[in-house]
Image 1: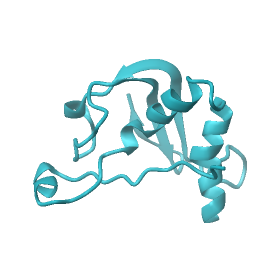
Image 2: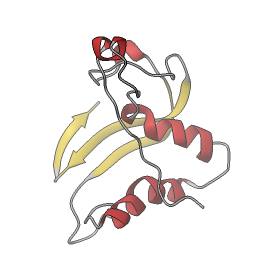
Image 3: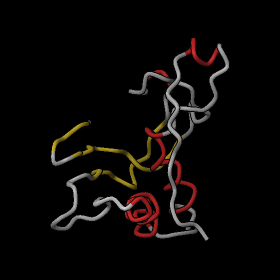
Image 4: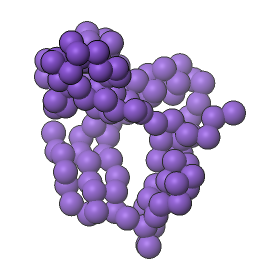
Length: 123
């Protein structure tokens, strides 16, 4: 059983990595990676993925997030789950460009992110 899917985003600079820092920059392509591997393959539904990456983590942590309803924070992502993207490490927004996904084709383009009702990213 899986209760939640999350990333340990570790956006280390090239100097950090050279000094031995572990981890990758995973948050930018987290949805597309899991959408491609689990939803597009038929393992789970898109609704299930939404619960695993949004509602369930918020519930586990006791946060008023993960739902679009009164009383919950207006934090959400607008995306196109069917849009094919190609990961290009050099074009990542993160300060860290360390990703094993460079050059991979994935499904799921993030169009915008909203945090506390304010747009924090828009394509």
